[in-house]
Image (tube, rainbow, N blue to C red; front, side):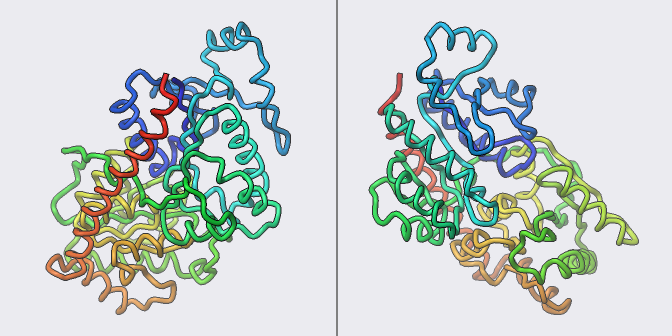
Length: 386
């Protein structure tokens, strides 16, 4: 059995953490299964080889999609491709898609939804399940996009919305269908590793910037002028409270440029951690005393381990996450004053508060729900297990 994984990569640590979470379950449930990944700038040959993945051949260019012809290729041709480590859509038995937020108005989804729905249609016609892992999706305003979603999403074997707003975006288009479910983020079940944080002294304050906060795609334009100053104010407050702040690069080059810009504005630049292993990244966050994070999976890494993580937001997925953890008061406003920010940081550090207790209880609840999610996924995949 070959399982294609979509929406995972090796630069964004959240996307790679999803990859690790899926690989752990594949090894547990289907140890004989093989995986396939499509080449990209963020999934090089060396990186794909590191997880033993086949290269998925993509016969797609702009609006043209010729992957349908792979089902008509002679078996001898497909076997020849395999000698070179290449498989086609016709060779795939199951698709597990964690792309999520790339399917939304903020990323101009006309082309991606067109190709996605064509793939769902073909997989359904050949009895192959298409599984959407829990991710934020939507909104969808384009009439053509909405028409494709209405017609083809119900043909997917499992469509998991990550929060109620995504569920509503989809349900308002499709209406009820049996495979539409809601589950939270599934990286919360990835186990931590020990001794991965040599700087740790019990007083570390982890700051995770996000280039998207100062990108015109951010629908909250007030952040464009206040984001960097907010982080700089937080650094000063953490230092005044006797903590040792540091930057953690959760994605790659562009977040690194933002970190460099911030450090240039500090009299005493912060240490910068660039860790390749996403599980170690999660462990570094979880072992910090304080966290201020602008990356979704960084927030998950903190909240799922009982840390009252402060966050900024550039999409609905952050508001939904913090509502789920009963922690919306930890979301920072773009016009927050320095005294207000200091009060918020003080709240996040008060481990005896009811807020901390609520976060810990929710963390345990959502880890149990993640196990239920994987039982659903296992049930679907086992129907085609070879």
